[in-house]
Image 1 (cartoon, rainbow, N blue to C red):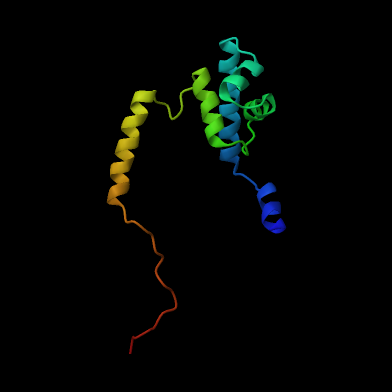
Image 2: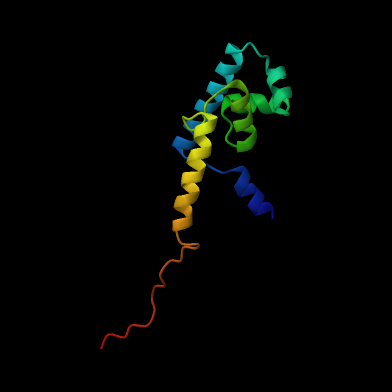
Length: 117
């Protein structure tokens, strides 16, 4: 169990992931300041500690995604480049596409019986 926790704590993230989280954190901080909200006010509205908000604004990828999205929503940062009404439509279209996909993905077996004579 200790080995698993050690790997989780030392997880590395791709450059793209780190940059995306950093950008979202900076956008949240900018929007908070434009709305003249203190860090304490936004943290309280989000239901988190000021320390967690500081981690969000610094782009810490270990912060729960739901908490990060909630902070973004509260200050008006658009997620997925769409307003709230369009997100519902995108969710429905994605559900339609997922319904057409196979329920499970199985990799073909390798090294099976070779029946070429």
